[in-house]
Image 1 (cartoon, helix red, strand yellow):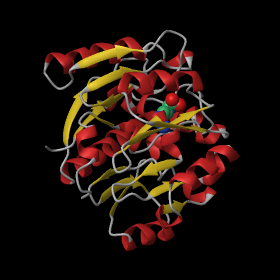
Image 2 (cartoon, rainbow, N blue to C red):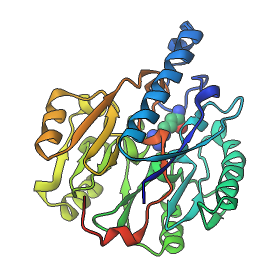
Image 3 (cartoon, rainbow, N blue to C red):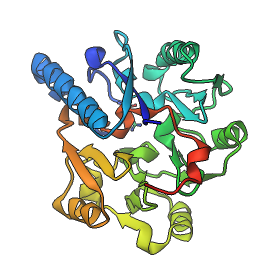
Image 4 (tube, rainbow, N blue to C red):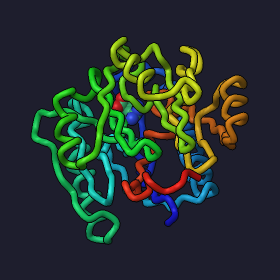
Length: 289
Ligand code: ARG
């Protein structure tokens, strides 16, 4: 089955408030019309690259005054056609919960999702942005300490019935796991060590053999290129460094680099503009493409 990816129409995307250190409303407002046009073009470029890599896209409408709905990775965690909806830590994004709930009910009505569930109120967990499925290892990696609570992780483990390794994030710049950690289909894990608490970094080292660890520098992580979508041997990411591009090519990946500058002004890039709807535990035991 083709990978199915949820995106949100970018019509209402803006950079209006600051809830992470990347956000630059002043740069956005310097030329709103040009930035809106650039955002539309960047979004379409991403959609096109994903389709070219074999994905089928589902697009939800955005909503006025909810500029960050363009990042559906934060809407839910989805596995085996079951969605656990997010609870946002920042008040600015909380009204997105009702919109995404309706969006997921719609996907359910169309037979794309079987179950839509919710976390208890007050238990912040920002969806796949902080809960990455590692298909080769058959487990989740879950970020906490910035926008998701450690206490939400046992709920994720119970709901999905899958192993889940908590990783504590210590830097406000790397506020979601998906900006500093990226499991690739061949088993390699691209990550930025400086984003993690020492015990979590030790956990990463224990669980991932050194040959499969690809470490990014602070400068590389600062390009938000670790926020990447890997589909088979294709990795779609924001502009990266020649060094990382070469490492990925050596490992047999085809890197598709995109100019995602308007979204980087909001602290997001390729991965968080998407949400895979077709991840399944069945695929975990299949040979890796
Ligand atoms: N401005 C958004 C926020 O701070 C960006 C979210 C990007 N999402 C992600 N999963 N990294 O919430």
